[in-house]
Image (tube, rainbow, N blue to C red):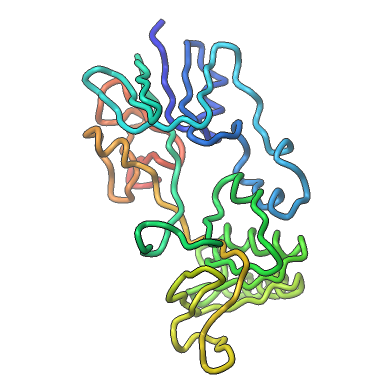
Length: 276
């Protein structure tokens, strides 16, 4: 039986690995075992520990390579190249690379000290300090802000749009959500754009609703969490000549097959009929 290689160790990859009846290798990337990413806010709030959101372990036929990242796919040789110098041969390759947080333009490509995305278990386990700023008022940002407030962290939520969770909620529901966050102690600012990230806080664009003393539009924070949306992680596929669609996802058909034989894609990285 030909081996299956899955690139990515998230929820989609873990579930698939448990269901396959073939020798399977998972190139997981993260150092942690697979976990339910939807429940990260509860870990951030310290309402429960990482063990609560852990997913069931794959069976004995699965080799789980934690902390190893795929750097290239050689479709001619049918091998995955890893960052530790090893190569994993495959009969079938499944790309389950997920999505990456949207980040603002960065100096030297590095996040300033104290600034992190809210996307992984390591992000949820990090010590936020006494004061935090959450940038982004979508589902992830709202969840992070509420979790921090429940934990007793002085929290400010900054949203560029007119209201919170504007993709999911109408104006009335968004107003109720804002009232709930305020009741938890979250300071909420909408129509407020971040101009610059820096160690120790953020600088807001001029005209934002909260100028500091001396006319400086600045929010101080021990930690800044970025929750500005996500984009499919499809660079590995693109570099291998596999078709990527208009949303940035890896194009798949109704059987999750990509444009390259023996290669499939599942989860947040996949795009079907123009939708990720």
